[in-house]
Length: 255
Image (cartoon, rainbow, N blue to C red; front, side):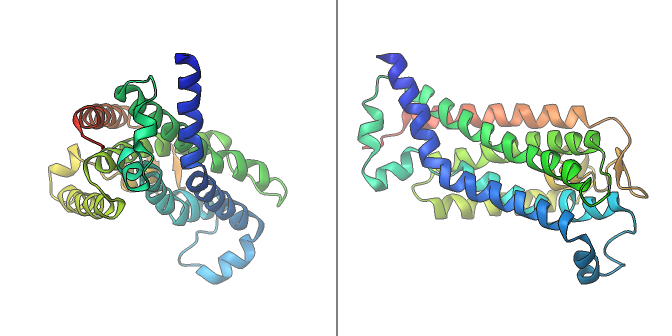
């Protein structure tokens, strides 16, 4: 009985997040496809000052430091919304709460599904760009793409956890969105103030390597060791936020 409830819970988490996940994944995949297949047109539209002459630089500017990266940051927030608060509005929270599963397990399954989806989206550029580039007689190193995917994944988990916590605290997705954007803006301002920027590096900078020592700005290649200390900090941050979300879920009255 408990095993069936567990499977039902995972299936329910997938069904609820599936439309958002497929849209997010489709947009990221579409951007990667278009930038590789229509490189010439993209260069003409953006101009030589915006896009370097090298193919590696071109991919970096459009994917890892451009539109795809920006949308990914937004999509992890979209995946973090929902949960029991939304179900209260839909009138389905009572059904979920009567399942023979603890509230802690509810939040862990929801987090697990979101993290898996973020991992899948993070890997899309690494799966598409190096392989598809061969069709256009270009080369983008798979090792570079995989390292960027790791940066995206860890930063995505940290962002997702914050959005998930907000969605358990506030009654509406709009309020959660507003609060998260406000906090993000304040953190972005704090990161510009030394020495706070050393301890609170922008996730966008970490994902793209912009102004970071592990990216060579002349070649747009990751050349130094990845920022393992920063990545560990983000993982710990995500764990703390998920624990807080679980605590709120356990104490909250969703009736």
